[in-house]
Image (cartoon, rainbow, N blue to C red; front, side):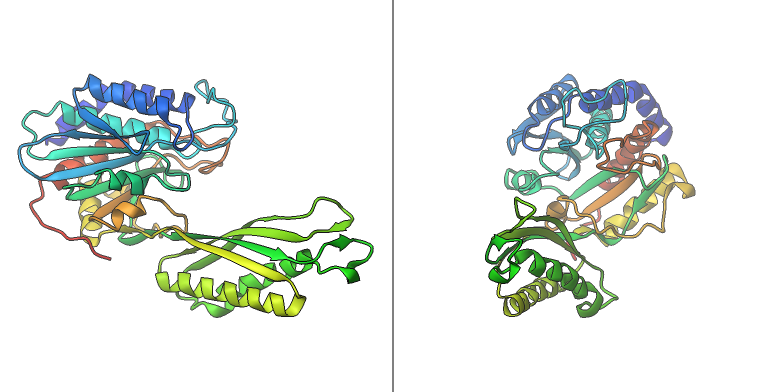
Length: 394
């Protein structure tokens, strides 16, 4: 595809893409509740004559058929967050306590823009599949259900992307290998013996034991883990007790483990169990641990990462590609796709801002929409035209 022609096509749909993004931003829906969002996506696809089907409840799989058997795919997540919006935008959320605070509204609009362009191409030499996925922000995640319902069937490559407030508009980052961490989650119950705050000697205080555990769990990273291997162990919630003068019967803790290597996950789980055993012996409490692998590592296939990087450089020039970006300890359920087929996850700069993703004041510079449509269209075009056979690898 001639890049001058591509840029002209992007310019022609620019206002539509902005309009779509603002509509989805104004009417956000939580994970697995994206009913109106799904209906709107399907209506736009139908307006371009693109065949589609529903999947995973509120998800949509659309495909533009080409002449040969090659299929390349683009995934966009569609759910919003339980956040009260405070941006003051004219098109701010009309749904109290629900907001597109992570940029998924932009993802939908960009993917629809790419679909609109490909729908105009006659005699497409390969097929393009669009995966509009629900429930990226929830548990259980939407990606495994989309895979189960055929999202990856026959697919050669899959591209994922995220508008990213760590990059300026017009900048992209493509990381080779692990790009986002795996995420485990755990729940700990520490049970003691309740009593009156005036008589602590008659009780077994789970709060004191819990406070000790909070300090000890930090030693997993600082003293048990190889410092050359990234590992994060964080507690996100501690709850227990109802009154200022009562020692509660038990407390509960919730936390997460983030790594790029399954060996580190096993190490963290092993030492959490050992620390809890020591807590029982030292404080006389009883403990219970529920530990669950939540999301695997998001992995960029080395060949695809190099190929995509080259396409971005060819399309937008040397300054468009940020080569100093490091993998993130955040997680993303695109990881489930990347465990199955060769995949590449791209960050699309949406303007550095004081308010980052998941903030009630997060927003994007809408100029990033054009850049996203332009780059992703060219990436899919060149990957679809690539005759190289590449297998999934880690």
